[in-house]
Image (cartoon, rainbow, N blue to C red; front, top):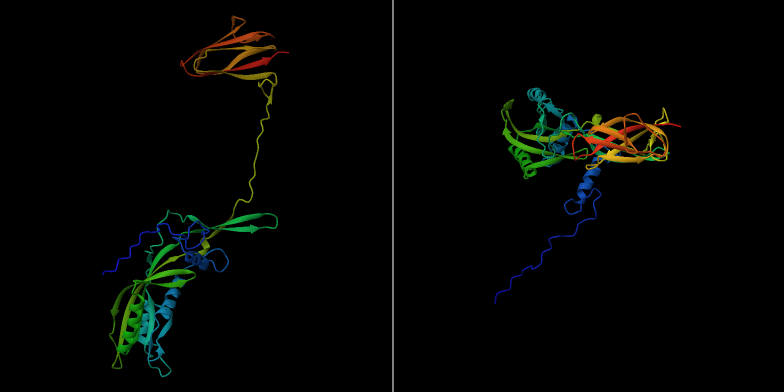
Length: 357
């Protein structure tokens, strides 16, 4: 009798977060705690800013990678690595003089040397992209401050790092094929996954192996020396602390209020500051209105200052049409009639009233 198959009938497509709420907004599923740890490594010196990464730092990172991750043991003894980065010119001189010798003036083999190519190309680091020109600053951190009186914040900004590709030749010189094979095995095992990393000032910098070549053409005193070259590309970036900026953020807001110093009458008419006897009144006519009637309880003279969408203005007091200036007495009724320039649209007439005692 066949064993029944185990079929999973339920599948949880919304798993619970593997960690609590992430401070920067991540939910813990897509962003593990490792991301926060990497950010802390960059700022572990307590300055809230990353440290500079320049050409010399990248050279030291490559040399440390060779010393720590490509170390080779032959006959129970570690193969020596020259503790400096050589240029192509220095390596050419070194290979001719062989000053790397022991106390008996003999070449102390085997040894490993790192040679850097002088041309530094614009980088292909996949973590960096092109940005707009002029080295725009980006927000990096907001740091609380206290000046003894009030709390505030400092805003830390940095430009985007400049990606660079630097080519290195890692050469091994030996007189036994066994030593050559041991180093070759260490290198191939390290780069099985295409790239390796060197840790530099809190950053993991990728290193890619380009090619392997043989340069065993050196004969000295009828002795055969093997020399094999491994070409690596370090995909780093440049980050100069001279470009970092620290600016104080807004610690308090100041509200300014403006006041109109013009005097106003109780009936809402505006009195000018120069002459409190003059009042400007705006008469508004809607789409269908062509006349407005007003009653006065004070003596004044009325004139037209300006109009909008008005072809002509006619004044009449108590049914009698008058011309400007219109003299009004207490108890009079003023009717303002207009002819609009564009019919069926709003219009305004601004009049000035000079109050007569």
